[in-house]
Image (tube, rainbow, N blue to C red; front, side, top):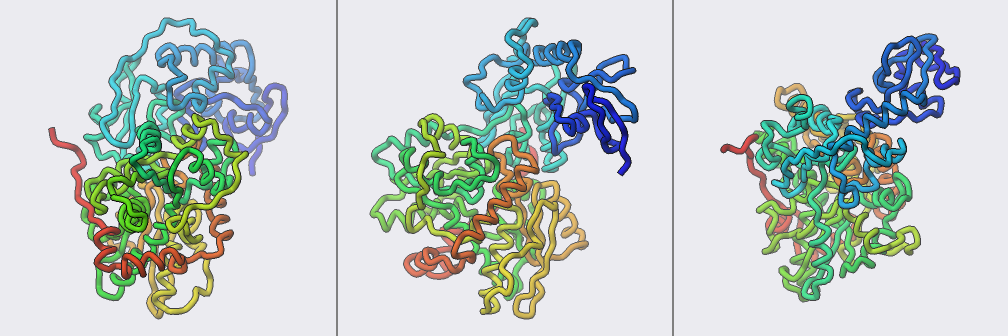
Length: 577
């Protein structure tokens, strides 16, 4: 490795050639403030918060973009540097709403944190707010362009990570904003509501539609039986909202907190993740043995499904007809469980705790009412649940570990790994292999489909048949995979696609910041949950076996087809005027 010698604030360092001043300073334990910079994105150098003095340079330089050179001398904390940084942030604040306490990102806002760090107590410039309209046209995401600081992090997330390309920087000078194509509302564009723009945004310019008040109202309605389900990924991310660190496993404490919030029953989406595997695994076997449409594509991720409906409707016949675990849970809770308890479906209120903003859209799809009413009534992101817990004054760290309620709270390790990219594929293979061969798996862990590599492949031998599978996460990788299938360059039997980078652990409803480092730590925790459970195959879940005996009959049977399966529809890319 080629090294160069630099001096930063008096410290002499040898750093890799090609490093930026920002990277070199961090090696020296010096944290230069940034705003447009994101560790997983390309350098933008548009905010100018990270300016430093470079000896011999006539102007201040952006540390995030300026490469080190042999003999370079850098000063990061001079009066001019501090004064310039304050001025840059004050100019942003002059055009930013001064209502931090009512913002969804209050105390989690990078601009707010930076203003405090720089000691800004007043803004010397006259306030000139933008006065732009709020975009709350869709059921999942709200855009507030008045809070936008033009960092363009959301633009990169939308274009380069997801390959959807809804958001653009438009206009110039004081009129510059980041806006959807043609400045249309999101509801009129092929936005998939994945929420990756929210995770990238350093402020509160984009946020989820808030369901907390409707959930509080339901909890305090004596006529409602309020049931809550928690997605696989939530147990390794909620702890971040409680200050427990990235990747902390908080399953039992989360259950205890939900009971104390007032939910009548606390159930686990993992139960219906196991149910999904039973249906989807048998669907794959049926397609393989009866000449069905291949490759079969997974259907658990609603952002991915909406992307497919807009951009690849020709693949709709390939998609598994299985509902997602969230929607299966709603249907089962308002039929099977309601019957067991003697309740009417309309008196059962189902709340989901999800790592995903697109789940809010999925819950209100007109196809999702096979229980006779809307299957899922409200969806809370992990961030929203964190706000409810704080509002209720609960100290999660002091709560005891509690178990989910029966029977919709029993699950296996196969269900837990749904939260990570490759997890649905691995869970399905664990069951499909044993159903087809009648033999126990020689090796339970399918490590070939794990990890943050964009596209992963594996071949599994099932009773003499070589089943070729692929996994993709993020829609940019999904697009490349589908194009390869379309062109005939790649051939598979089964493909898992998750909308968000890293799968659900990187969902648009997860705690911020969500970086690749955080994704990997959450993934590691998910697999630890799997290893800790006594049952690790979906078909071994006794509660699932009981559900089939008492209610559904058999996988792909008439009742399961009615309640647990659905259809999808081609959507235009742009709504006609």
